[in-house]
Amino acid sequence: MTVTATDKRQDDRPSGLCDAAISVDRELAQMDRKIDWLTRLTPTNIDHIWEGFQASGFRDMPDSHFGEGLTDDAPGMRRELFALPVREIENPLIEALLLEKQRELDRQIELVRMRGREGFIVASVDLFGHVSEQLLETARELLATVPILPPDECNVDAEGVCDAARAAVDRYRKHYPDFTCDVIVDPTPGTSMYVSAGNFHVAFDYRAPGSRVNPLIQHEIGTHVVTRHNGDRQPLHTLAGGLADYDVLQEGLAVLGEYLAGYLPAGRLRTLAARVVAAHMAVQEAQGAEIYACLVDECGLSADAAFDTAVRAKRGGGLTKDALYLKGLAELLAYLSHDGDLEILFLGKFALKQLYSLEKLIDDGILHAPEIIPSYLEDPAALQRLQHVRTVPLASLYQESPE
Image (cartoon, rainbow, N blue to C red):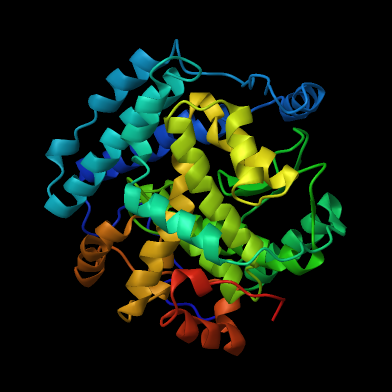
């Protein structure tokens, strides 16, 4: 791996940042961690939901249960959030970026506060956007054209995934000793794998095809952890937790990483399209059982994939976040088709709409290029795939077998 930026972390007095910018940046990053909306919207009773759903003959899906919410803390957090001196920031680009993040955190607080209540869908659409007709049409076209191929055998358990994840972390740490990522076995069943606060979580009951383990690790560690590390090395620490609306590009990059790492199966692309359909149905207040039936009967998903997708769509009462995976992938392909630079997208967590401002801050010497790029980008075969990606339509972005 090649170091593309200075090794020295600039924590004491970041160049080009006024006192107000430093204070607001640190406080926003801390509040982002405190809200932790994803954990607060992850069901804690997935096993119970599946068992009850089966017992009902797949006609009635039990309600999801969640952990701690924010009902009592929300007013105080809002007061704290809007007391931050954002408008005292001297650099107008940084002021605009952090003002946008301040508003997003307010919407995240509202999302968690409305969990399980009437109005949650409105809060979800306010934060993540609605499912546009264009995106829904794209999803339906993919489901109609991308072939249904036999799934790979799930022959690797959680321990095997953890071993591979630790090996991936060790490879980064060999070149960058301060690269941190704990690999954690999650005791909550059915939660699959995910990254939270820079750590890689795998559910104890998780199983995956051996051919998919490395691509999925590149999705989670090669994208989500690497961009967090790079963002944390920037003077602007909100790039570690994410600027406003960063999810779209993050998930697009993560899915693309699976393809560049050698195996994005047709079934995965179909599942991303089905998530858009499920999110649209959730916004229309369809019940979990209705969404499941549509995903199985009309979208051709397996029972397990349909259940997982339906539960994800109904989180909190109807969450539109899952539509962002396909949206992010489509926007990323459009960016790359116009010769967009891939490596710069790993400097932290941000939205494509903010790239020009971030590049201007790099030119001004306030930010710097990414310190780490994903390990798969050192593979000549991955670079060849990247050139191919720049010219192919979304419907062709899958591999029939591991490359």
